[in-house]
Every structure is written in structure tokens, then in C-alpha cells.
Amino acid sequence: RRRRTGCGACCDLAAMKWRLAPRTTARLVGPLVSSLARTWRIETRGDDAWRALRTAQRPFVFLLWHEVLLPLLWHHRHQGIAIVVSEANDGRYLAAYAERLGYRCLYGSSTRGGVRALVGAIKALESGTPVAFTPDGPRGPRRELKPGILAAAAKAAVPILPIHAETDRAWRLSSWDRFVVPKLAARVRIGYGNPFSVGPGSEAAAEAAGQAEAALSTIEMEIAWQRDAATATG
Image (cartoon, rainbow, N blue to C red):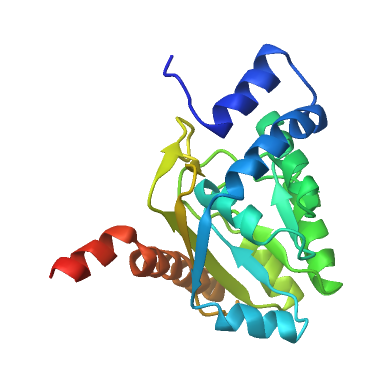
């Protein structure tokens, strides 16, 4: 079996070898992860729309791929955001750490408790709480958008705000999503897209799905470190 490194390996060791409960694991491993995160040098791009939504206290849906969840959880900690997480064991370990960072966790997935999570997300949005979705979680396929996020945004009549993160150096775990853990003192760049809405009906949902995937791809290209290097030498 391939050896895993970084914070994910620490969580695996604590959770699997000693079979600790998620909250116990978070208490033990969480401070190590947070100490690592404090060394990251974070910069943001295109965050005007996000700041406008926050200033207006308007609820919205954060759209992000599962693989970049850790740096985004850290950057947006203690901001009153709810997050949809898996009911599976790996999701509960991540949720326990997210709760330490001030997130409200809504449990469910496409395979377990999906309806309950969707209802909880809609209620949170209608009460004014921003909700973060990883539409390819909890088990993948990687970067394949599932429709729950679109249904929640349409039902609550709130905009979707795409967000992505890139880092100049990171551990990539051997998980289905190639989960990103930025290394010590890594530079982390966070990019925001333009918010968009989802209209009623299947055609509008299909259009929004394409728009969401295109937006995330565009952000990824715009904030990529390799792009900076190519521009500097071109």
C-alpha cells in the first residue's frame, strides 16, 4: 500500500490504528494542522463579489472541489458558514476539525442522508447562512459535479459563488480526490469567480452545471502558479 504523508497521514494513523473517535482525533491532530496552516502565505484574487455579498449579509452558496477543502476551510474560518459533509467516517473526521474552525456541519451526501443534508442546506440559506458545497464529494468521481448544490441554490433563490485554491507546493494524498495539503510556509492563492443564479427547471439546472464547471476551470487557470512562471518567461 502506498504510504501517505502530511496531515492526512497523521489523521489516518490516529483514526485507523488507534480507532479514535472523530472529535478526539480533531482535538489531537487539529492543533498540528492549524499550526501548519498558520505558516501558509495566503493571497486572494477576485474577491470583490464575495466581499459585497458579505457586506450585504446576503446568503450564498460556496462552490468548491473537494480536493482544495483544507486551505479554504482555514481561510474562511469563523465566518458563520455552514458546510455539507459526508456521514461516512472520513467525512466525520473532517467535520470535527471544521467545527473547531467555527463551521456548522450539515451531514449528508449523494449516497447517505442526501435529502436530509439538502433540506438542512436550504433551511440554512433561507435563514441567512452561507453554505459551502463540494459537489464532487464525498467519494467522487473527482471534479464531477453532482446536482445537489444547484437544487439548494435554486430552492433558496441564492447565488452560487465559485472558489478555488492553488498552492506552490503541497502534499497530494492518495485519495480519490488527490486531497491537497499545502506544505510548511507554502504560498496559497485563492481565487473567486463571479456569482451566478440557477433558474427553475431541468434546462436551467443543466446550464448552471456547465457554468459552474467552466467557472472553476477558469479560476484554476487564472491563479495557477505555472501560469505566472510562463508569463514571466514569455
